[in-house]
Length: 173
Ligand code: SF4
Ligand code: SF4
Image (cartoon, rainbow, N blue to C red; front, side, top):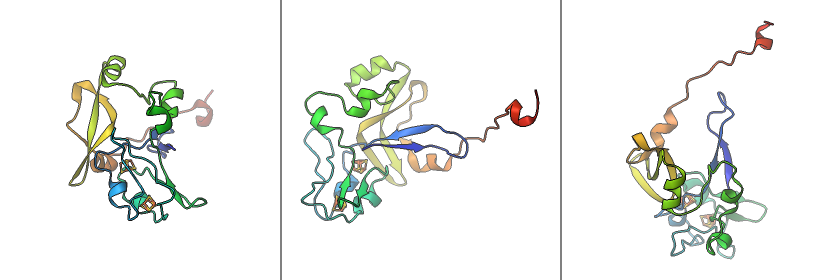
């Protein structure tokens, strides 16, 4: 229920995992005409309730982070629910439990700060005039942590193209 996205495919094979950010005011639920997306009291935004979902894809189009996926075969929207069957009883979500580099981390803020002393968490994201706060956090360098991450502006920034010189392609050696 998470996606692996290329961040700048023409220039790098680097990928980034995309998980539901569990927004404090989830746009996906706000646009759902069937009230199929519930947010539990602990702040986890659930996947669509099957008896309610009418497969309209409103949530797919509205989520600013591009998270919900329409599963046409089941006529059901499905998304990351923080592995609620696990995380609600204290177990890590599957993604965090198998991540060898801790790029995905599940734990308390204290545990996070201990494991990433050079970084600080961000939970405010700006999309144009809209600011969204989230339960899930992204890490930024502690020396220059911004008040929020301006996602719209970041989409305009392209990494400088890098030329990879391989001797075998250059005909040398
Ligand atoms: S990231 Fe998208 S799918 Fe997740 S809670 Fe926010 S609006 Fe909903
Ligand atoms: S696809 Fe399902 S969960 Fe998403 S907005 Fe439509 S009815 Fe709601």
